[in-house]
Structure formats: C-alpha cells, structure tokens
Picture (cartoon, rainbow, N blue to C red):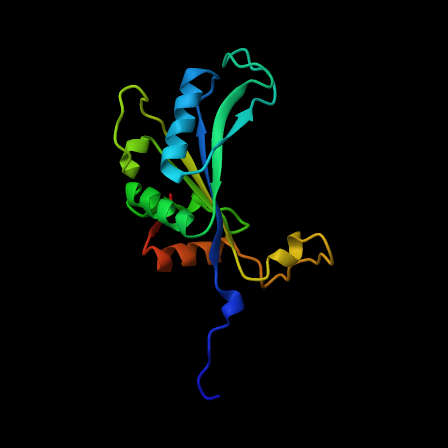
Length: 174
C-alpha cells in the first residue's frame, strides 16, 4: 500500500450533451433544423414551444420555435469533440457554470462535418454539457434519495480542469 491509487469515485464524466437549435419560428425552417439534428445524432429531436407571446419577435405562446436533442454515452463525447474542434478547443471562463457544467455555440452546422445541402440551409446550434461523477444517482433516484456531499459535487474549477486535461483545451479569461 505504498503507492496511492486514484479514487475512481472522483472521476468526472459527461452525463449528457444537449444540442439546441433555436430557429425562432415554426414551419419549414424548424423541420429542416430538426432534420439537421437527426442527421448529426441519429436520434429523433424534440420540439420546444414558446412560453409567452413576444410581438417584437413575432412569436406566439405555445408556438414551436426550437428543436433540441439529448445525447449520452460515447456518441455524446464524439459529437462534443467535433463541436470543440470547430471552436479550436478554446472556451471562455464565462462558458462554465458554478455547478460544473459548460456550454458554447457554433454558427454553422456544416463545420461539424455534415455536407452542405442548399435545400436545408445553414443552422447554428448550442452545445450544453452536463458533467457528473459516479454516485450522482443518489441525488436523483426515487427511493432513498440523499443529498450529494459538498466535496463530491463538480465545481467550476473542476470542470475547467477536466476540460483542459481531457481535450487539452484553452480557457480564456475574457
């Protein structure tokens, strides 16, 4: 027992990756954005509705305005890698939340390796990554739910360090 082993319960992993494409209007553009997300992930996306009417933006309450999809596992890491490659592995410090999650956006989906189709158009999308540790289920399960210990939570500092080691990324101080 002379050598210290790393605690596997402290390892950080990607719980899920949420891809969001907000078009701002229902209709044909939204369905084309859904096709783009389906091409990218291989999963059927879910439509999001507007919470209230905004006349200045021209949207009504309960009108479908965005589309999103949640990806987990190895596929999430692979898509995240492609998204970070577009950003050249550079994120701002403000992209990381206090709860240890981070997000960023890209302007053109064709940068992810999807072939450009003139009938579809070009869509930007948001990536949001939720990080976790083994044992996080304790806080979310139905039976015998418990609070997570303070030292077991993923903090902003932990998330930044994980990003820098896993992807050799750069965090800018802007």
